[in-house]
Image (cartoon, rainbow over all chains, first blue to last red; front, side):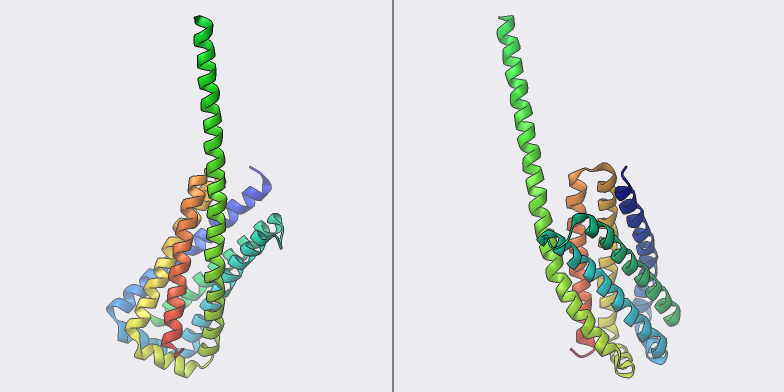
Length: 112
Length: 137
């Protein structure tokens, strides 16, 4: 396995791990919203400083994710070398996954 | 007669090799076309995601109003979380398949992973669009 391939596998595993954490807390949040919708949204309203901050962080993670997609399109257009794209895109994707998992975890802890 | 059978077998083997090479070339061509389609879908939804995200950031900066609107639209907010859940599930499965492709280098995993990732980005776009609507967009 080449160094680049090992780097890609490592970043995929790291992103997957962060994704599993985000998925777990998202599932718990959905179950909380499904069973006690008004109560949970009332907690969001009452603790707006923290919860809206976490929603902003979640949105920032989506911006990272979108930039990753735009990067791969730039490679397809020939504006960027494949090597650079393969180095940068996983960094953006993993950053997005880590920020998202942190935001979801904190958001869930605020509203539970 | 033996020579004729051997020649016949050789020509069959050559034909099989040629067909196999053609098939490999066809699959490689298809995966390149698929990569183009995948990246096309990603760029379309990527630009939409960027637009929605910056719009959301703008709306979320008015914390009082955002929190009140989320409180009022609790059913829609629960649907947004469900769409984000679908995005996470599809993205995780997709990245797992891409990870298997990186190890095994079998094109089928790359194609399947790409399909799951495309599904994921569609759900994320749906979630952000609905979230924008809740916050008054």
